[in-house]
Image 1 (spheres, one colour):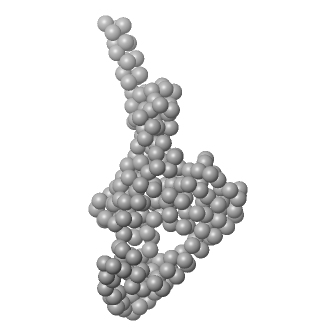
Image 2 (image 1 turned 45 degrees about the vertical axis):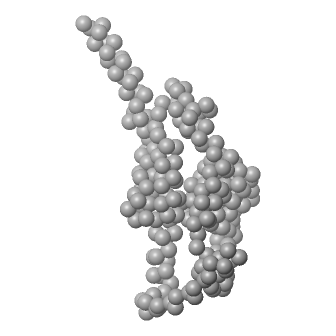
Image 3 (image 1 turned 90 degrees about the horizontal axis):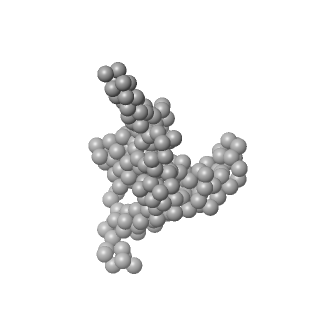
Length: 220
């Protein structure tokens, strides 16, 4: 009976050592909470669901805790695992262009066509690139890494992934998450900044609706 209990105890200990609960760290738990938060914002608040849902699930999948020493090839970074094969779409840059191709096809450019001056707003946004580049240099990143980090300010995910794969491959994962999260969370980040820079009187000004753009103009 004693041998059986010992055998059972050892098997239960082995079983526990393979569970996610036994292998979870504070980092895993923090990132899992962030992933769930992104999915919540996408579904409940409708904040860029086409971006935040895949990002959120990617964070969850990439931070599943497991026993690294077991060599079970279940992790996203383990060569030959199913998740690793799927992850090649990220490292090779297949997914971002496909996602943005779909988003771009759904974009309505009527506002820009009716008021071309809005191009200046888009051009001014590129100053974020130089700001991020300077800050990255100040934080002791080398120029190549700083360039890859700076392109996040361009608010273009595929470009950020492509450039980081060439200049700073070791930062590819972090830059991809930062770039797409930053774009998707604009509805969260922007309101407090707008409230800080405008008065209540200015915020209640009703803008004139843009002129109606014809179908021919859109096609051209």
